[in-house]
Image 1 (tube, rainbow, N blue to C red):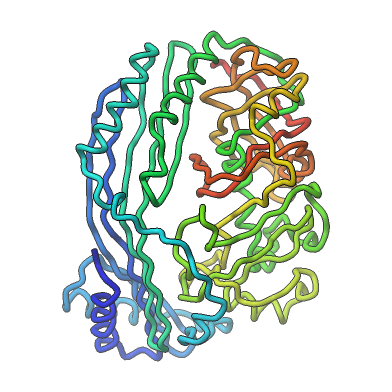
Image 2 (cartoon, rainbow, N blue to C red; image 1 turned 90 degrees about the horizontal axis):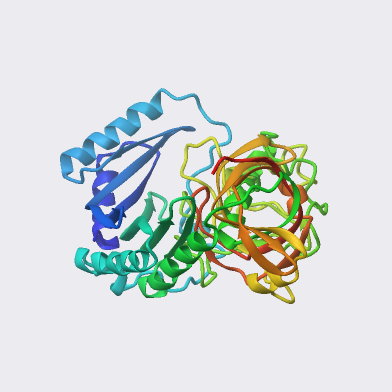
Length: 461
């Protein structure tokens, strides 16, 4: 693994080759490996290790970036030359700030839990294969066909600039996704953690198998508005479409559904959402793309949007804009993307607040007279960006509920649903957990029971 000390030496070489007013280097890379299986057989095992550096230079308000995955002296000279050549021909950016210094970069720093685990970094292909063998064994026991992945990684992320700011983060990650297939039904589960010992692959496989078996011979029920119980993966994948609107640049560009809504209640009073890189179930680096430390931010409190996240330049621009009195507190929060970029910033360590009286999914089912249980959603697309109306489909375990019990599997639905409506219609919630899906980044979210969820069509499977 590339170390911070090694990267510091490389950055010294980059500075030596540069004639720019300011220079910044982002380091990235690591080791990753993946075992993929289908039809109850491993069919792919791959591994790679790579490192790269992305160099940004500044000349009198002009900035540009160039990257290389070669760290020898000549390659570093060339990447600096490429960055400087690009920067010199850019138009000056009047909003470009000097790079943060060491004091500004460290402001508001939070201590984060351990996110590098030797047991994850040391996983071998044989160990992943044994894990797959257990999941496939469960499939065979139930006369099902299993497919999925078992992946692990050890990565670094670092930043240095010529004004003395620096940050370094090393992390491990483990992912398991398993789909169980029957002749006319399927079940799915997925989990991710920095610590591979937190992943219970047997429980994941057994749960996926149970969903496939219990949803066999699915029946068709009419489309319409139903009380819906969304498991955490389903919640994550649908709500993930709104968080890139929680940045100041989105307000300035008037592309956010929060334009003219900050400070108002747009969700139910039981909805509380924060961004917290230090949460024990979260992951990721404690600094942003400029090296500024991430702050914990309460985004939504009792359904009211309280504030947004801001990169340094966004905060300065917002303070001078017509929006300055409409977006809550304005200050850099450590959520900026690497410069230059068009997006500005976004919260990426989302944590939903725990309800006063959390319910298990089984308890939600028991309190439902008539409804639908959804394991996951997929193929989600935005229909109306301001009302945050999304469309997509259910899959891999959709069930009809009646009189507090699961009655049978149903054919999947297409939905058209507004997040404003959905998060104003949450009747019950469970304990927030670290959830993984396919359409959004991992978050800490609860299962939710939602009234009048809008299913518009029935699919053929």
